[in-house]
Image (cartoon, rainbow, N blue to C red):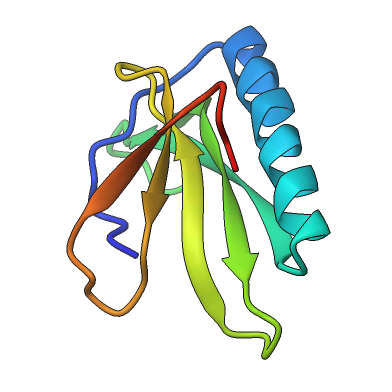
Length: 108
């Protein structure tokens, strides 16, 4: 998975809504025999004030994701919710090179 993508910082309320939408996907995948793991992401901005041990940091929530595992335990995809597209974004491992949008109302 490409972790260098620019990801939008979201409000707690939006993150909760995305988590609920991913729970629906998790249920569908579970019924098909796939394992999943929910992942949380944060944006961490640190600033130094020039004094050792001094400074400040800001932590903000980002879009959660769902890692998908096949029957053999290998990760087969990562699912996130696209803030702009209002669809699920499915990323495939091993340099498959693209993100595939899936409509929110049709996660299967």
